[in-house]
Image (cartoon, rainbow, N blue to C red; front, side, top):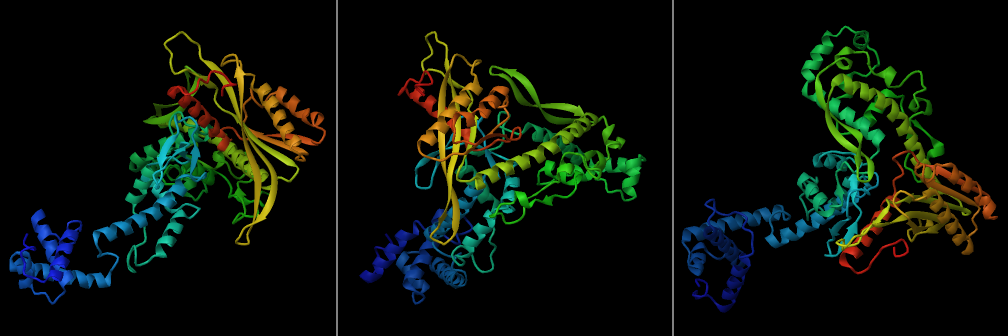
Length: 578
């Protein structure tokens, strides 16, 4: 009303009225300390009028135009002059609220992109096919996607995941910094930092990656490795809480191993091994117990940035005379091995359930002596297991990256038994079941030249979902089903005209499905059944370590079948309906 009553020219009135309208959406840079909304708005009007009219407009004229006190008008004019000077020095900081929001959204979108890539990296998270329904993820354009649930390969709270994100080998954080640096002056000034705040990481990880979560008791985990990790974590917590007391006990200990350590023995002390750290405790324990890793040229691929390294075979299988947990760790020190202090430790135990015996994570109290005995046994089991896992996973990767034109490479796994439960269950009924096997078939490797001039190797990858009927959940005859399916697939590709001379199959170690005499008998007859095939091989992955896209493909199918039942769009009551 005060603006409408002024005697200014029509042009000046329009400029002032438009500015007053804009100020309603302006985030005031320097509001009054009183916090009164009226004072803040008055301050903002002073600022806008001075901006529109320029310094030539006196404080008294501003007061007259707006109907406010000369003192308030004078203060607004001074604030305007200060902000204009600051804006020239740091234009990225002092801008309108709308512009700041646009720039902030652009900055956050860059951060979100690299956090999303990190959280879905196969080296950082793995597919969890025992975590319930898939996650529904809303993308930036408003569309919704269904993502397979994943779990962190290394457990830990969000702040630890943030530290791993910064130091990740794939340099996601470095790429984020590089992209933001390219827009210097828009997102930050020359002297400002270029770090992604922890709060941004936490927010985007939760909002953009709801499919990624912490491992649960039902998650697919490597029991051998995780049992060792849990024992180490229990001892780390004990040492962290009682470090001063333990240091006093070790200083007074007169056992032979403590005396040798004081004289410079290369043995690792328990305090060093059990010190809490960001990295994985199993990896650190192996580093302290074994000889240094060596380069293996025969396991190095052409596109690797450096030689592939792993622990020497004799060291990893505890045959080396210079290393191993029994030689490198002071197991005879009574400060730890005879200690009766009670601590809490998680362990994996078999418990009966509706689906049979299941491994369940159980928390219980043990004495330090018991945990140390448990840890020793777990280390002796875990170290060869980890070495074999590293070698076999690398071998499978080399197979996929180097198999020739006449080879068909197969990665296959059975999904959990399909329980075909109807949506309406009030009538008497018995659920029917179906077997589902997933095949990933790799054929036809070839090289292409990209527009950039780079040569890249590609292969054809076909995914097969094969359903089979079963009388009940206890009579599946998986090895029969596997061999029938494999022979059908081989015949299919031969009929397509593909020259297959070698077949190599990768599976897990399930005895009922693959690691049995029936399967080996059928494997040996493949070259006899198909004259063009010269050799058939079956390769077994390390226990708990045959993870890949074939792991979760079956769960997506089961989820969709259940969805059809719940919406009553289809009645899926046998394998043929599937």
